[in-house]
Image 1 (cartoon, helix red, strand yellow):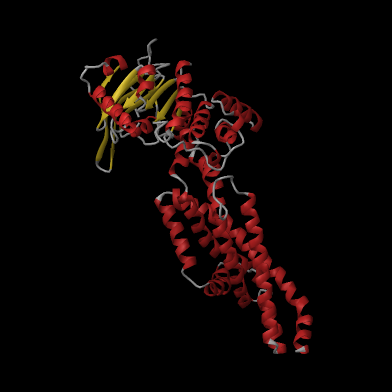
Image 2: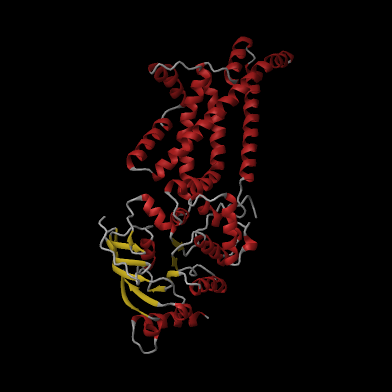
Length: 261
Length: 226
């Protein structure tokens, strides 16, 4: 894969997507997605179900390899055809899944420490110490010896966040991290993500948590049928009477919530 | 009646010695089946097409023939053909082990494929190579889930090991047959043999059940009514 001329200047985005496209089973899932994510930025992907948000996030760390386009981390194009480069890249990009995907056979501490040991090659003791520090960070040090089946949904997701943080990622991808949670558990997970955002973690997050997005997102990307059709700050896109698709979609989300409650 | 009891008492040490051979045969065959079966299952799930086809052929071959045919085919046929001069015991272990590998690989394959897709995805997202993810994440879970199926394989293999007597392996069945053909005390002798198999099955299944409990992950799979 040829490496296009890199544009290393002081303003290099930490993560850059260039014209990402993906076709699955003859169906166009993503077309021509580009974005620059600066250090410390929180970008939120919004859009109806089937818009391609989840596929896009999984394309970014090559869990679903994109057919077209390039992904650059700190200006360098990732060559996913080379296994070692792919694995090294993934270590720098943390991922949080909607359904947590904790390793079911490992307790919370081992869930966090296993990649430190098996990927980073840390000793059992050093990995456990680091894992404990990450569990403390998400407020779960007292749950270290519990297994996933013994944790609540919110606790599972916080362990998953600790697991990703332990690898010192440069970017975090979050795929609807609160969608599978009972309403009363959403808050504890969002609080952890909010602390990360305030601490300067670079994040791309698919979410329908509009209050959270309004308060913390630097940019909203509204996706539909595999394309980004609107982008801008929450203030621009969500202003009353702005007439954007985003505002329309979000007001319908809000209506739905009010109907429920 | 008294004669029968005397026959059993006289033959028992001889037959019990066969118990050791039976247990050794089953142990060897289960171990070989495990060592071959695990990589075969991984290859069949994650391997490239030619590898998957090769494993598929192996499984089809060993599951497609009666064990009696396989034992005779290998011992008197294929092993001779390639110049291997094996004892009846070794040959029985090998043939039963290779056959068991075919069955065991499918137990493990079912367990691997039953794991949620997200397990492997999460492992990859952390930067694990596929090999590391399979060793550290997939197999520890899949092998635990395989223990009930594996105990089935054990009890079947134990009884199949009686067929090794056609090669002259001096196990329970061969020794019982030998004594019975001389004393004509068929009923008490074969009842003794049957009882021995019964006891070995029971002990083995107890041990495996113990293992299952020992390796049980809290909350992961339930044991009986909650």
